[in-house]
Length: 82
Image 1 (tube, rainbow, N blue to C red):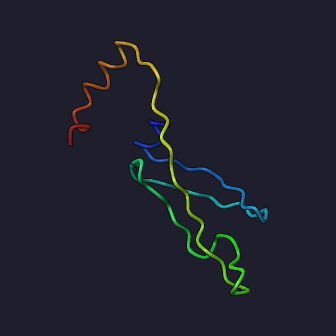
Image 2: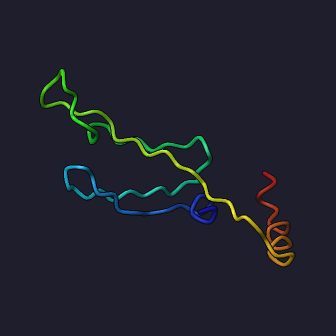
């Protein structure tokens, strides 16, 4: 969500092998953001025992509509101009 993108997010990811990985993104996420976990991805077929990186890419959900009141609140957030 836009809130998570601006404020950070924490979630649990269930890996294809059943492992659960706690993911915490404390920073602002932009549309080009990705979080990489070296060695936690899929097995590398040509190198038994080695694993690729697990990469999270983010799609930010923007609201489809906003009330005039919510627009006024967002406009008042001056740090967004930085």
